[in-house]
Amino acid sequence: MIRAFHYTDIEAQPVEGCAGVSIRWVMAQNVGAPHFAMRILELEPGASTEYHAHDWEHQVFVLAGECAVRDAQGNLTAVGPGSCVYVPPEQVHQFLNQGETPLRFICVIPFTPQE
Image 1 (tube, rainbow, N blue to C red):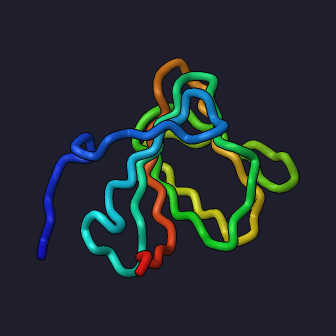
Image 2 (cartoon, rainbow, N blue to C red):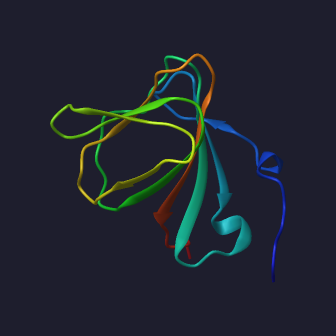
Image 3 (cartoon, helix red, strand yellow):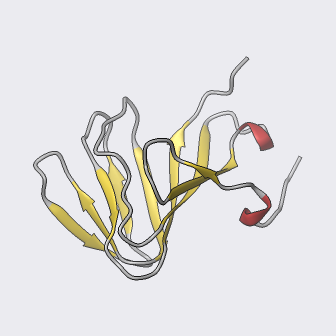
């Protein structure tokens, strides 16, 4: 069944251990997605995600705000609205809001629904 809704219909949840960061799981189990999950993250000014790695890739599209992406060597790459970021599996990474307004981005990851 096709589902259409506004992303704000999905409740934002705080990200544990990351003050000022919230996440909305806009498409995953709620729509019966079998392969990918789409999340929208929002970071308040000065907030950042953890400096971490995963077994899976991330595909990111920046919607609003000024962002820096930290890589495994600690290098920062500035990105803004309309930018795309690919994070390979096992790559240490971090997203930092470097602007004065909220940073909002879409993040798509592989997903396997729980049985």
